Length: 152
Image (cartoon, rainbow, N blue to C red):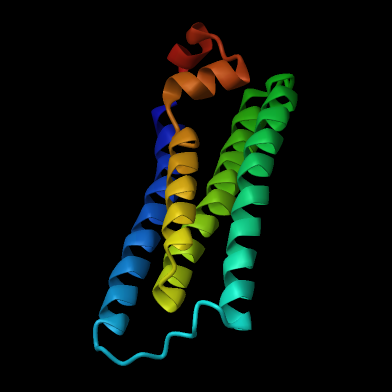
């Protein structure tokens, strides 16, 4: 079970690594002092902000709900190997969908410099905390017996 958690945790860590890299790159690129930032009231700024906000508002609840619904289906699968592989793939997909919102928020923040993007990044970061893998959560989601876990 530890290997399964590590596989999911790798994707979790990569998302936060991508966020940190986006932050560092954005900071370095904007610290030069040259202002190529579009006006916050321009069509481009409003469109980008709306796109990110809509993505966050739709993707986070959808990813969490769809994953929860699928865990019920996966728990009913008899083959333990198939059950776990589907869970890992679903968990990685959920992380990718939520993590994309986090990285997009950081990137768009450095392009537009609007505080709403920081709030979006915060919302996505909190949502990622709900996606953090743990052995106990996997066991409860898939209704795995402790006895079966000891066999591996």
